[in-house]
Amino acid sequence: MKKWAVCLLSGVLLAACTPKAVISPTYDFSHMNRIGIMAFSNTWADLNGVENLFAKYLIRNGFKVVERAQLESILSEHHISVSGYLAPQTTREIGRILGVDVLLIGEVSSYSPARTELAMTASRRSQSRPIVRQDVMRMPDGTYVGYQRNLGTQVSNSVDVRPTEYTINAKVAVIAKLVDVETAEIIWIGSDSTESALALDAADAIARKLVKSFTKQLAKQEKSL
Image (cartoon, rainbow, N blue to C red; front, side, top):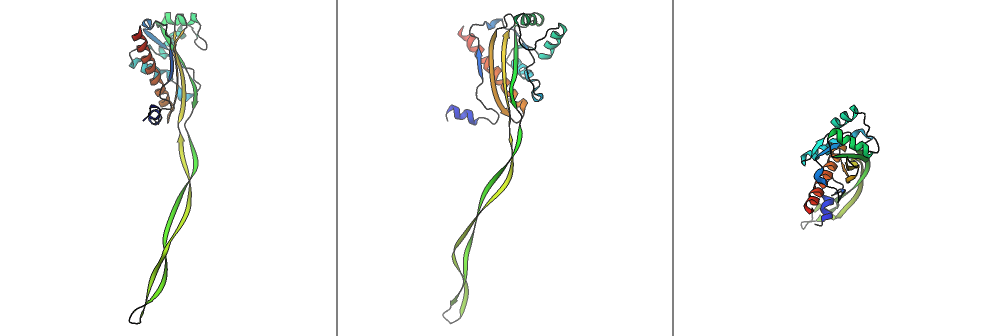
């Protein structure tokens, strides 16, 4: 089976096989020891905490992570706002206070909640019955005997229309990027979209795939040096 066909059939959950991601070919990732995770921009309550899913997979892949709650608490104490554009002086200050080398920043770029819809479905039914006729046969002794003569089969068709309820999965799209705290340079950026019955399950799949993609790209880049 062709690769694209395997991709298409492999999942109820996944809408795309691989995320789109780009890694900086010139950045020295050997200096990346600790990652600070910022709260993702998100306007949907169903997807609160998406950044925690990225923290889970980063830790699972061996990265040292300063998670969002701790980061935000420290930044609040130092009266540092991180909403909107992060200027180089802001990222440097965050790096100095938290001892992180890069920041993971992201956003939920689109979201369509799961929904249930009603559709009318039609099914055809065929029914057949024999066609018979009563007849009389004269026997050799002169008596008459009644019997049924088969004249064929009558087929009748009907259409049965019924309401059918079906569910459309939630669709989620996420963009994530790693930013160097010294220069505010984007050193990696990835995006992905997928669908699942639950919004957070879709977001979890995206986080897993993006972190996996970054890990593979990083390993490939380090191998080429």
